[in-house]
Image (cartoon, rainbow, N blue to C red; front, side, top):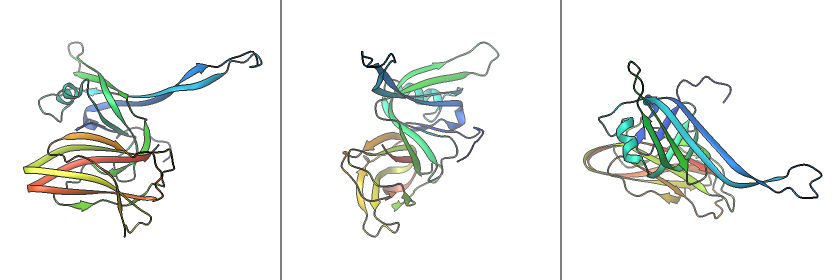
Length: 244
């Protein structure tokens, strides 16, 4: 990915796609710098990394009246913890994504007379900020059990974890249910897949974030699978995966 003008940033906040309601999104990560200066530091200050943190901030045009719109979604999420995913471009499979499990800590709306009603908000990380990729696009409806595109994302070293974020954006039908899981294999044909993570069944718009235990996984190929049940069910969801 080369230099680019930001014209189509995607922002998924728990169960809401706020991309079409946003005109500014920022992702930041930092480590506290702890002073370790001593008499043998040769007159130079020494620092060590302390606790890490990340924030996702957004702002844009305010709308309300539906759970998918920014005001309804922000009020429902305020004070809660869930997955947040940002793509600096389109959210196609394999696209770069930054995601974390975060606390929706701030929401603000309102402006002077004559202005387009704005909103702004912030989410503060409770898990690491992961640099990964999109594993399922938000605009592809799923109406039956199936699997997604295989992506070579690499092995998980000992002490590292596989992280995954799931945003169920819509659910339709009678008693619809979808259970999404993450599979790995040593080859792209997935002749002998292993399920590494399984999200709880979702029957309505919602968001979940999962991670592995920290043990090594030698498989390098990854994909999503899902089980769909109900009468004429249909789901839209976005998902991201990364190793950190």
